[in-house]
Image (cartoon, rainbow, N blue to C red):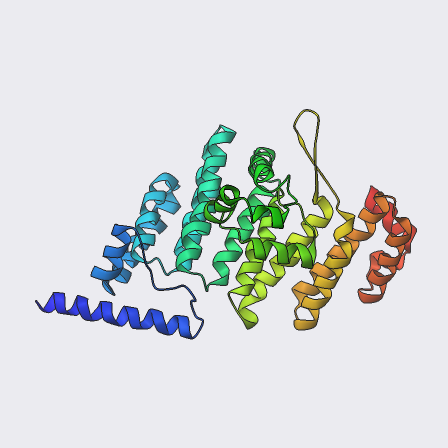
Length: 348
């Protein structure tokens, strides 16, 4: 009887703590409703004891990771998320394990893609649902799009990019959605908002502020989820998402125009049209965080890329203007030798 009373009191206190976290924006997720039966049982019946059990399982996770037993980690991490759904670190670890560790064990690209998608969907559909006020969960989801799919380190990256582009093309008018038309298409709208968890108004706002961008490209979705993370957090807590927004924009400038080859292959080209809005984004973030060296380094790197990209695309006058801005804002040894030498070096 004493044990049951303790569990009941623990559950009452848990609800109170959840409401306090929401009030103080520590975690803006609503109290859990319509949760799977197992998760409802562990969070309500076990109350505070669930944390103790999760700690024990984490010790086992560490051992399995050291031994490289990643498939076993998938099941164990799933149990821990049921015990501690409000802990963003658990969802992040679970998604990372599937998207990185398990996927690379698959020789077939289709199987790899399935595990990468499992990681994406875990964070997007569940991790954010239970940790809507944790900007790091949004950041991790953005990173999967930016690095795992948008990057080139995984030998199957072109397969991932192609599969994602195919999924988005049919839903979003080949990457450039007609928002007014979509609002009158209930079947498509249900899939966009229900399956992919994309909010049309947020997409429209992103297109207005930074684009229009091609939503078939993974960097666009890294941008989207970090904008959401910024929206759901405040002050310095939003800074990691702010930085990834800039990183995503850099990627969209360099490879933000998607062309489908005659053989169905993807060709990503620079999107020059985004340049003015990206400059404004960098200037705005730098103004808010004037002492942050990472932002300064990122801005200088973007300007270097922009000079050489604009020059290579035939916009030599604009390239020279950006070079002059780079030399003024960030006087570097490589800019001291002049515009011609700078762009020539970039071509080698």
